[in-house]
Image (cartoon, rainbow, N blue to C red; front, side):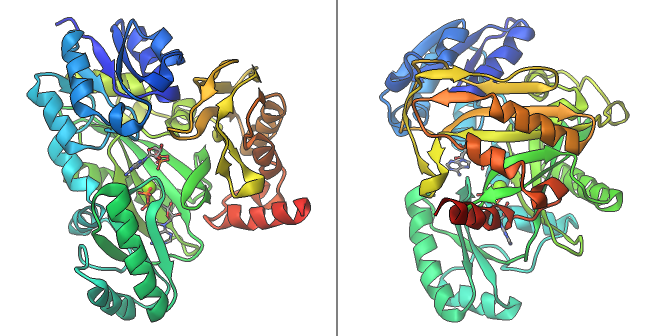
Length: 452
Ligand code: ADP
Ligand code: ADP
Ligand code: MG
């Protein structure tokens, strides 16, 4: 069969997917909003179709418009990227209903793991460790309060449909719990059209460690080791690395848990199982992301495998092109998310026109981006504008390489976090490694003091 892929996304990930498809000899169709008519993904695809106005809900979340574009251009498959419709089970159903291939897991799997409370229950049923918490969602604040009292403060209140670090709150007392519960429920209703919440014990100073897996339609399953994504602000990742600095015993435990989870939900495609690891190296499953992840490049650098190509091949019915024993870790990779935001003002977004951009280069440097001079960073979308990834034999060499690369990365016209990242790369705690999820807030306090 002659394949043709529509990419239902924008920005760096749309370009990343176009590249993978081109290397596989598959033509691509880009979709774009009116704000993105001059975007690079539009230029790089073989064809491009405008699907609506700037606002995401009129364009990149407009399932009908996207599906019509795919039908009109004779596409055989749709790659949803990350964010937007990537984990939307109804969209996956619509794609399959139109006799096209959804490049991702089955709609049924998306439904299972998209409900984070249910994903916890599945983990428990498969002996994957979870933190104490509610069995499924809690029906109201009083029921939540009972759970909170039973497991003990601090607790975390989490939206079942949450994502992107949103719909999460910590509570330290009964009073605070009740307030946070109402607030989070409203936020979740507004953000995810689903106000349902569940409760988890708050894990103190954990590391966020996630495992990349691939499973084909023939049941072949592999993991591609782990990523440490502990450098976060507001529960959102900023810097990721692979491998982590955990002991091999814990790493093996994480891999085994991730494989159990993937089998448990009959996963197909590229997926990520996220865990928290506390100071005693106890492991807790938190969620499964049923899509390609923003930070997938660090795994590609250390394993030398192309995850997006593999994802496409799997969707087209091919068996995995390698076995577990073929996958080795070489060196250390670090990714910095370059974001159009101002770290001096609460990381507020900084949209605008790029007047100049100079990319770093050299051995072991990779940049995934959609930027070019005169491109306008729109306020309508995520403020991620580039990913800078370095690969070196050791972590310290990777850190040093990242410093040089950040120093030579010039973006003019808007505020970015480049200088901030450069300072993180010189922080003694970061250099030592194995930081917890509270690190960036500690760093930020120092940063603000230095800038006061
Ligand atoms: P990753 O784990 O791949 O880093 P992120 O949590 O950073 O994923 O999310 C990737 C992208 O998807 C971001 O642009 C984020 O804002 C968006 N995103 C993730 N989940 C949701 C969701 N449930 N609703 C809206 N946007 C989401
Ligand atoms: P999202 O769907 O938004 O990605 P996650 O459930 O993956 O949400 O959690 C995002 C981040 O929030 C984690 O990486 C971690 O830093 C923090 N977090 C989530 N659950 C807990 C918990 N139970 N205890 C402590 N921190 C947590
Ligand atoms: Mg997560």
